[in-house]
Length: 121
Image (cartoon, rainbow, N blue to C red; front, side, top):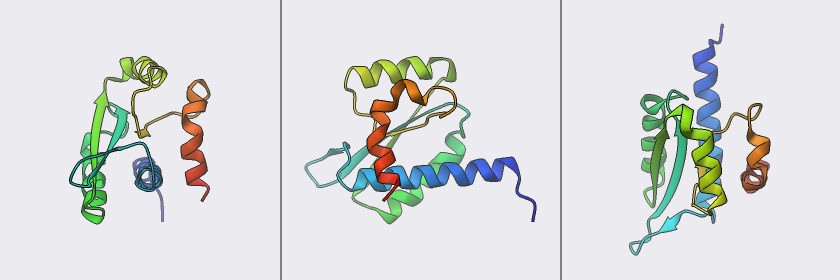
C-alpha cells in the first residue's frame, strides 16, 4: 500500500493533536468554566493542515470528551511565529500549538517541554 504525503500529514497531525489534547485534559492549562467544562486553546497557522482537516478532528475529540471544548485559532502563516513568541512571552494561555520542529521549535523550547513529557507517558 502506498502512503501519500497528505495521508502522512493527516496522521501525524491527528497524533499530535490527540497527544496534546490528552495532556491538556489531565491538568493542562486550559480554563475551566463554572459548569465544569474545560476550554483548550489550540493555535495553528493557515494551511497547516488547515481548518477543513482540523475541525472534524476537534469535533470527534469533543464528542469523546464532552467536558472539554477546543477553541481553534488559525493565524496567517506570515504572522504566526511572531504572534506565538509574543503571546508565550506574555504568559498567554496556548494549550496546543502547531510547531515546525526543524524550523523554530528550539526558540520556544522552554514552553514546549511540558507537552513533551506528556507525550512520553
